Length: 169
Image 1 (tube, rainbow, N blue to C red):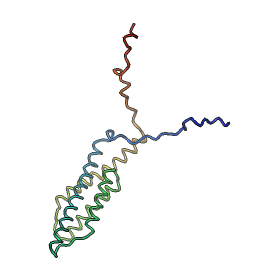
Image 2 (tube, rainbow, N blue to C red):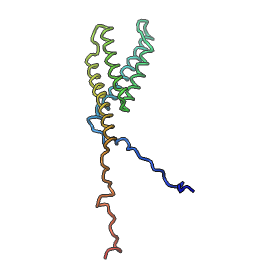
Image 3 (cartoon, one colour):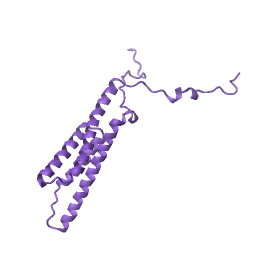
Image 4 (cartoon, helix red, strand yellow):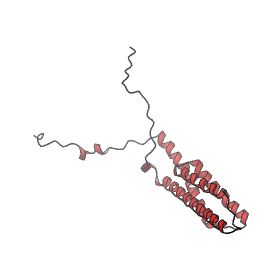
């Protein structure tokens, strides 16, 4: 025999898990949450505008509907999910995509349509984008220097077992 016990657990280094949601600072998690909610609102508004265009197109000959609008809605929904999952790529693409689409609308129409709402949305997307980068920096630092383990509730002296009446001298 080689002295190996088949019932012994293998020696494996355990990597620290990701920090619990409560351990992530609010200055990081709140802008990310606001960013994906803003993306959901943007997607819902785009969907409503697309459906309104479809309904008006069926009633008149002048309305123009493009299947690209539905692709736009799907892209916004996918990017909103990516921001929710704290993806730096999704947050950056959402910020750039929304900024470029607003620039394209202004160049096409010649009028700053929806400029105020566009700036508000860009503000939230920018904050979400920077927060996702800060989240990944926080995660890297947390993995390199994990915090000390928290005291367990069972370690509290109030929860120590008390001797029963028969055990008291």
